[in-house]
Image 1: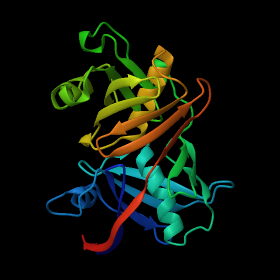
Image 2: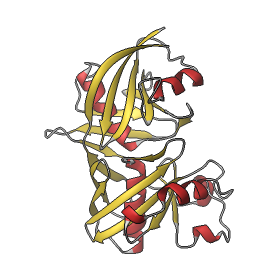
Image 3: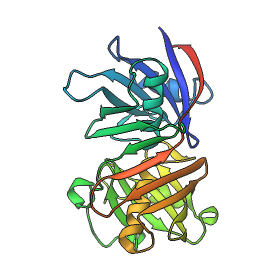
Image 4: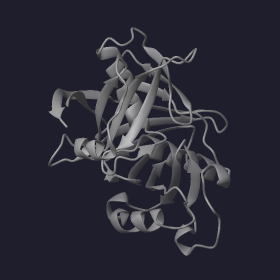
Length: 267
């Protein structure tokens, strides 16, 4: 089969985006892994699928698959920004603000006049059973904040993200039985009350240049700990994200979303 696609990126987090609004999405895990392969396919952190919605008040369904293993996951914030730019650029909607249904949430995405995208990421979840997380006495989790932004996150504060053992400690924490569905591991460096740096080791992807939900989780953890004001500029390796949280409701993320190229691949 010949599959049209669009390659996009948001703060260096890169995606293959597929329009499935006119025909059913039916790629196998093997085909998804081929798409995500950086040597034998297109290459990406995640594959984003745009599907039509028949639900009142919802413009599209938004599905996310890891490029490395083909597994479907719950949420991707940087992908959400690329999603709204894709549907606008491809003429699938004329609206600057759209509502989309993910596996477990409804998101509101807004394309701003300056080209950035603001995403209502929904409220953070702290209840262990809903993360999901099994509390215990695991030494690796001492001082680690655990929460969900629609997907599970563990946040560690470090003095210097450049020196942090992301590639070794990240997978060790991911493999802990305390996280029955795995976990994204964020390494947060606090610069001041309004600025931070971050690196994230993601489930099914390893370290990426940016992780929207991971950045939101880190800022939420920092606000709860008293390290940050309600709005924080966070520098990831791939770009800058602005995260806002008032301590109660939704977390809002603002950042870039860009098309890299359009193409077609034979699968």
